[in-house]
Length: 109
Image (cartoon, rainbow, N blue to C red; front, side, top):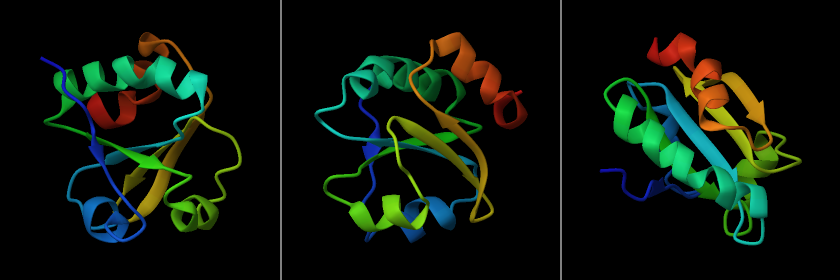
């Protein structure tokens, strides 16, 4: 069963994301962002199906502006996949689950 995704913060980003052994998809979102809410169930489902290969977490840009600014997040939703402490892929905008899975093929295939 898909559950809520872990929330990361400016303070925990280094430990939770950059030092993670697995690729980590970070969903940069905000409470007022409709498309962000639209893709949340898809991300939870992908996490449930592929959690052994990729970790999916959320970062609220209103509460954690430093990390969003550091990675140049200008529009949300932005999904960044971090691997070995670097951005390996960026997906911008709301997409259907199947399209997100296709975009993540390199990490979950």
